[in-house]
Image 1 (cartoon, one colour):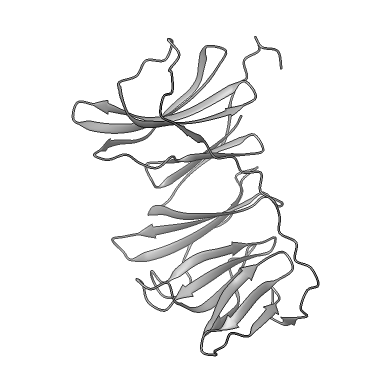
Image 2: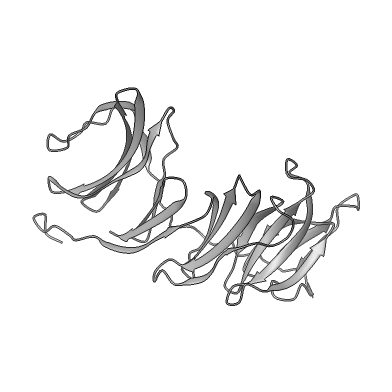
Length: 255
């Protein structure tokens, strides 16, 4: 791309949920993205899986297990693994549930077990009632016992997160209010992505902005009318941008 050529951003999807986006898991090899969303009013934990390259949804806001006790644990080619907690406020594990991606059907449930690690090969678990711990490997699809692997393959991640800059210098063509906190910035080739808080009267708003060659390409308000600084809310996978808007919507653009 020449220095004078300006790209045009293409939106992949903008998906809103009936609750706060609480946790995200990504399978980069298969372009899958799983979301755990939580509705504080109804006390429900809901799960969604989509193909992040196409925006195709496998299932959206499905509930499994007891309300508020399930968490995203691992996302693989065929299954979504959920960890069940003993209690809402306790990290102690009481079991696992495996969900088939294409149908959102429960494949298997195992109780009184906890996950030690999960890989493409399988899931390493242990019985929480037995001490000292005894580890077994089980299959993603049917929970059958697997032989101990001779070697574990751990995939490397290409996810890029922004750097936090305490002394960021805004270009002259970008108008902004009083900046509060640091600026999160990430450069993709000659494309600059920044996220920052600006003060408007007595409230803050968090803004994401993309520019290239002294030209703004995209601008969005991530959240407004807030009292305190929010964490950075974007990341990039293989030149695809993802960001969280209003805590309940995930938006993606090819960059």
